Image (cartoon, rainbow, N blue to C red):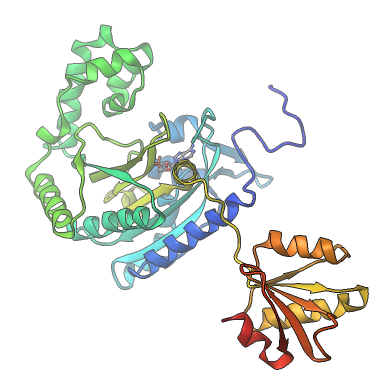
Length: 421
Ligand code: AMP
């Protein structure tokens, strides 16, 4: 086993530290608020689930389940897995709590870490964050359009330019995806000798996956492969046409991507991906699709659904490449004690301002006046409130505007009002 220094974060994981963490939190809040404004309620599921949730939901033939899961046996001899994705757990939860028996669609939003044992590289981690939504219970192409428009508006709001790739991968019927799978398998068999070794095994197990291959020889073969768009059934074609016309109506631009099949088995009909610049090979900033068969795979009734998951690590990477400006928490005031005698009152003042809803900080390191003023400047606070200054009489305070450098004496009762101006 490869040895790692025992006190570093495990390979493929990282600490989220300031100042990046500020921007991170801001983006999550913005997303969750935006989704809430469209009716998506916040929710959370456990970080681990019974392994079966993913084996049945995502599919054992997928890379994610077959090769990337963090699965362990707990002390009660149960097989548990750190969640590699959010949709199967959300559906498990909807079924468990019978949310689908209430008002439909069930609209939910989440943000949290996912775990996959992949080879780490830029934009690819073993613990990574996703923010996502699920609209469960509607088969309407309008639900697809709503979900996709929300993702695009989220990217726009955070200032990240992405391209929307859109496809329909049909449904698992003989007249649709299964039939296409056979056509594709026949084509692949014909070109078997030209395929990369690792991809040959897929002809029988999961021919559609060959579109995801990064192996040069396979990519060359796939360039001439039959496309799913030419083989999906009339029902799926009509659904797709309605999705694209709804998107047109919303002014959402997309690129038809007939080779986009996506990595998880539960997708059917609509499949989409958002690609961003500046990320190299890991350029998928998010993706999603329709998963009308998922509830049944988990042992429930047939409940259609559509959703997306956006990769926050990649979004933040791409943003930091676009915009290097540092984000900090915004402080309204920094309280400074002129001498030791005023250290206690300084904490009382900071608390008073915080209780009034003003973001306030102060020195907790017993620094001298100069050190405190430096810390005040570093904090980015708009004002510094100085306690114990001679020019301010009892009950008044010296307030320094940190932008203009001007100082004024403010009466005690007027302080909060002055600091919010
Ligand atoms: P998926 O669940 O595979 O469709 O992934 C949805 C999004 O999550 C992707 O488009 C990526 O932005 C992000 N993502 C997936 N796997 C990783 C990973 N290992 N590291 C970082 N981000 C990831």
